[in-house]
Image (cartoon, rainbow, N blue to C red; front, side, top):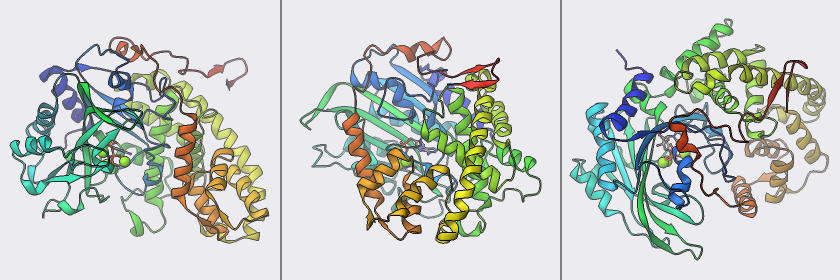
Amino acid sequence: RDISAKAIRQKFLEYFINENNHKFIKSSPVVPYCDPTVAFVNAGMNQFKGIFLGTQKPKYKRVSNSQKCVRVGGKHNDLRAVGSDGYHHTFFEMLGNWSFGDYFKADACKLAWDLLIDVYKLPKNKLYVTYFKGDSKLGVPEDLETKEIWKQLGISDDKILPFGSTDNFWEMGLTGPCGPCTEIHYDHLGTTNRAEFVNKGLHDLTEIWNIVFIEYNRLNNGKIVTLPHLHVDTGMGFERLTSILQGKISNYDTDNFSYLLKAIHKNCRNLPVYQGKFGENDWNNLDKSYRTLADHSRMVSVCLADGIIPEENQKLRRVLRKVFLLSETVFKKEGLLRELSNYVVENLGPVYPELEKNISKVHQIIDYEEEIYKSLQLAASKDWEILTKENPKLLEVDVIETPSFIAAYKQISSAPPAEITSKLAFKLYDTFGIDEEGIAKISSALDLKFNPQELTDELEKAKLRTRESIICSNNNMYFDLVNEGIPKTKDNYKYSYSQNEGKYLF
Ligand code: ATP
Ligand code: MG
Ligand code: MG
Ligand code: MG
C-alpha cells in the first residue's frame, strides 16, 4: 500500500525534530513580511533572511518546517509550466531544515542522505547529486569539500555532477549572503545512467532537494568575503517527494492532487475524467485544464486564507481570472472554485489551520471576484466579437480574452508599431497588467517582433530602481510562531466583510 502524503510530511518533521534535535517553526504566511523584493513567499528561507543578513539573532540553532510557497512572478515564476508539466506548481510545500551557525556541509549532506535512503528507502541507483564547479568571475572556487562528502557517503563518481552558478550558486540579491549549493535529483526510470540529463528539464528526472551553504557575503564593491557564521538552508519539494514514494511520475497522480481532480469531475459529470495525459496526447487540452484548475485552486485558497487581497495583488487576481475563465469555457460550471476551495481546506486545513479558520473569508472573496469577472466578461465579450472578426488570428493564438488584454490589444492594433520593443512591453506589463505570455500573444496575432528576454531585463532594471531596504531590523516575529498562531501584521487580514452591506470591503 502507498504511504500517504500526510505520513510523508510527518516523517520528514519527525526525523529532524525528534531524532535530530531541530525546533519546529510554523510555516509563515505566503504574504512576504517586510520584504518588497518578492510578491509571495517563495521558499522556506524567506522568513529567515534576517538571520542570514545578520540583522536578526536566531532563537534556535536548528530548525525545520514545511513552508507554504508560491512561485508566481519574480525570479522564480513557474506559472507558465503549471499544467504543462507534472512537477511545477504555483503553490507547493517546501520541506526544510536549517542550521544557523551550527552544523555545516558534512552533516547537512548526511542528514539528507540518511533520510532519503534509510527512512524513505529510496533506491540509491536512481539518485544523482550536483555540486558547485566554481566560477572565476564570481571569485568562488570549486566546492571540492562537498564533492568529497558525497563520495564518502558512498555515491559513485558518475553520479556526482558539477554545475555552474546558474544551478548551483545561490544569492539572495546583488549583494549579501550567498554560497554554493548541492542538489539531489531523482530519476524515475533509473534503468540506465542518465547523468547527462540532470538539470535538463526532463519530467521523469527532476530535482527534489536543494541544500544551500551560506558561507560568503558579497559586498557592495562586488567582492566576495567569507561570513563569520556559516549557515545551512535546505528545501525539498514535498509534492515531488510524494510522487516518488507513491511510484508516480506526475505529482497530479498522488493524493496531494487526486482528490481535487476527482472533485472537479464530480462537479462536471458530462466531461471525461482526468486521464493524466500530457502534451500532444492530450489533444484538446482537457487534462491540462484539469491540472491547472487543481493547482490554482490550492494557490488561491492558500493566498486568500493568508490575507492577500486580489484587488492589491494583480498576480493573484490574474490566477483567479484564469480559473474563472477555465470554469466558464472548459468546465462550464459557475461557482466551481468556491466548491474546490472546500476540498483544499479539508485536505490542507489540518496542516495549516489558518485555512480552516478563514474559510468563510476565502468563500466571500471568491464569490466577489467571480461576480466582477462575470460583469467584466459581459462588457468585454461585445468588444471581443468585433475584434476577432477584424482579426481571426486572435482565435488561433489561444488568447484569454480578459478585459485588460482587450484594452491592450485595442491600443496596439489601432496604431501598430514596427515591433514590440522592451519599453512598450514594459508598459503593457506595468499599466495594462499583461504578462509575458499575453504580450507574446498580442505580438503573434499582429505579426510583431517581441523578445521576452528583453522584457525580463527591463523588469529586472525596474526592480533595482525601486528596491528599498530589504529587511526590517529586529524582526523576530516569525520565531514567535512556534507557540502562537499566525501573526496579525498590518499586511494580514486587511479585508473585512460587512454583514450589513452583505459584501466584502477593501
Ligand atoms: P526547478 O529547477 O525544478 O525549477 P528550483 O531549482 O527552481 O527547481 P529551488 O528554488 O531549488 O527549486 O527549490 C527547492 C525545491 O523546491 C526544489 O528542489 C523542488 O523540489 C521544489 N520546487 C521548486 N519549485 C517548485 C514548484 N514550482 N512546484 C513544486 N515544487 C517546486
Ligand atoms: Mg525553478
Ligand atoms: Mg533547479
Ligand atoms: Mg534548485
